[in-house]
Length: 221
Image (cartoon, rainbow, N blue to C red; front, side, top):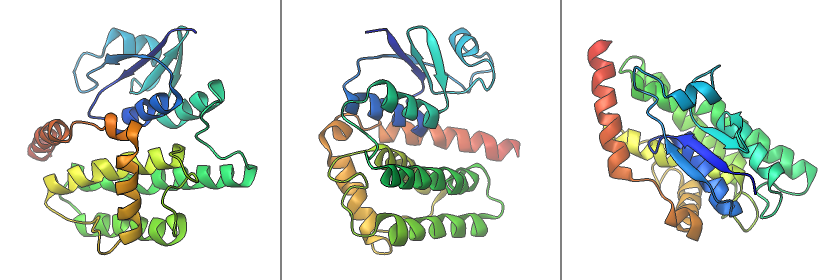
């Protein structure tokens, strides 16, 4: 098997999407820590992602694949066992639709975190996103991808894991289990899946990192 490397940072939800996918597939890989917030970009990052200079970057056999969603699709196609997308074309399209929905609407989470301005509208956008997923995306499913974790679970799982951390830092509570019982139950099932549970991020470390980042952003605003 060609060598697989993952360039990333352990504070990134987008990097964890890829980590979880590789672990679920059983693909061995080397993790290379990259500090994207440094003034001097890593030579490896500049080499493998000179366009956006962002993580994650999957390097397979010396060839880079960039952008977490593109990487997830690549992983699914390159290693077709332990499928992370449904085999039915319609169900597969539906999964991709909701992944795109989460990416488009999830931007509000980071906007809420980066600034104290216009917080009411940003929090409203997050609540509407959660409500839409609860009512139309999840319905009564325990796992989005049938009876096992798939790409859609990974996408929503990373978003909600980081949302809870950022909520604590900002001092708000949006992902309320009483308001979103179905989504909360799904999230607990997701975290208890053996491979996910064994590879959950360090919540305290991520919280400390983003607390410091938020302080810098707010003081420089």
